[in-house]
Image (cartoon, rainbow, N blue to C red; front, top):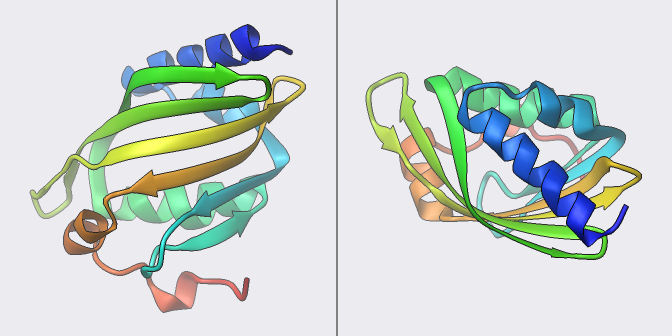
Length: 141
C-alpha cells in the first residue's frame, strides 16, 4: 500500500475509534506489532506483540479510565509506510479527573497492518493523572 492508502486506513481507524469502536484498530494490528512509549518515565517501554500491547497497555489504561476512552485525531501526515497522527484524548479517570493528553503517534504499516507505533505524549500529565505504570506489569525489555 502507498502513503494515500495507509493514511486512509488510519483515518478510518480513528473515525471509528472516535465513536467508541476500536474493532478496526485491533483488527489492523499485526501479530508482531510493537508499541513504543517513548521517554524516560514509568510508562516508557516497548510492548512487543499485539496481545501484550492490548493487555498490558490498553488493558491497564482501561482499569484507570471510564468508558468511553476516546482519542481524537487532529491531523494525519503520510509518507510511504509511515503515518503520523496528531491527536488528543477525551477521557475521565474512574475517580473523576480529566485525562485529555495530547499525542503524536507515529505508525508504521506493512500490507495493511500496523507493525509499529511510537507514542509521544505529555508524560508529566500521564503520571499525575493515571499514576506511575505498575512495576509488576513491566516486562524485562
